[in-house]
Length: 432
Image (tube, rainbow, N blue to C red):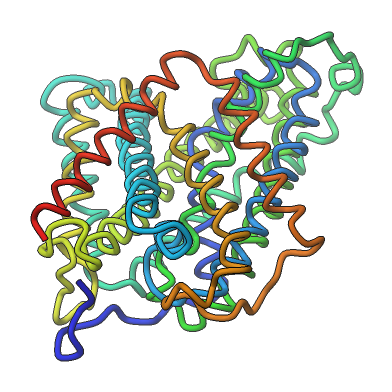
């Protein structure tokens, strides 16, 4: 249900660098500080090449997003694209999975922040102090987002710079302490190890799919969203690959370290370096959660705006012109998951949820090239991915290959999430 002209509408205030900051902020979260060890545990010294490879493959997906996003100027991102290309049901499932991944990720990052701060303030790791910390954090982030998209973007921009600064110090200072043999002694690996590492890296790279979601609040979305998609992937690929190179080159066995970036920083910068990275990780997680509230709420808003969820979730605040009910709902769900700890059970499906979003958007790119005239919301593309159908086909093949490497629990969880989405869709159809 589209807002009537007499009602408040979302405010267009985001430029291309705001959108890029939202993308970089969403990708570089807590995972980059912890997961280099897990990737190395699977593929050893091949890890930096793995970061580059998944970065290039992510670029193929980003090119699809860039093209298909250039056809739309409304809020919703992948939900809009797949809905226009394949109909209401497919669009709803993609939108549902995208929101599902955002809510689970927000909950897990909030819980991780409590653990990180527990090193300095042990009380926040358990009981009512933990619940209070998570509640205050949720209220603050939701309040900033509800007060206006411009205010939210300013905070995201600031937190993005704050999280990149410690990583820049880590890379620049750490390059001189690398032992080359730790990067050149390449172990034998199996196909399963490579696929497992690929899934881990998809998780690490995940988040850029939210860049086009707030297009309804962008100043020139059909030009700025494509720019931000490509700028995000190129930026994060460079940062994360260099971080992995330094960590792997400095530590004798990075796979044995639970906090590899902090441990590597301590090795060449001392306790001050470890503290810098520790603070950086908390800031990074706070920034990522800020972005999750912004993007997750807009997905729910887009679904409700088109009558596929209760109309109350499409309400726009008359003064701040933000989707206040969608922000409140998304924040409340994430808080409930974080406090209960049940986010861990559903987090296993977040990677597959992203693959559904990526694969669906790639397929929509091809579909809308030949059927855009049959989709009223789709406009002529202002950007077209190079090499014809190559990028969409590569993106879909990569998604299929990575899904084939998923664990049984991940596949079952992903199927369950899709079935729950189908039930919500059926309920909405019956209600309408």
